[in-house]
Length: 85
Image 1 (cartoon, rainbow, N blue to C red):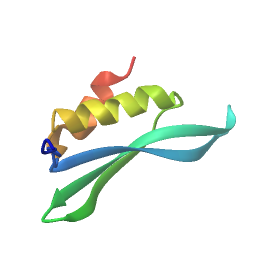
Image 2 (cartoon, rainbow, N blue to C red):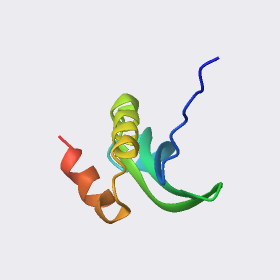
Image 3 (cartoon, one colour):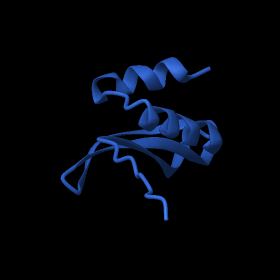
Image 4 (cartoon, helix red, strand yellow):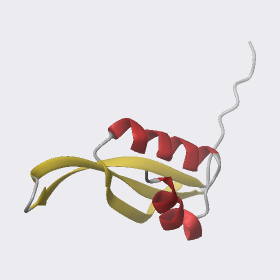
């Protein structure tokens, strides 16, 4: 039986769903990203950016790309801002 290899990422980005409210648009569902640091089997929340987009797929893709490329937390906010249309 072949051995399986599971990659453990130090930085994990995960989509976060929130309900937001704005005086002009009312209540809406928004998606943001949470950043976790994983070391020695422990997962610790480091940072979170809410209300990045109302497009769930867009934010899920950001989470995947940031995790796969191990985006440094130092660049988290800039990378999110640079990704916006």
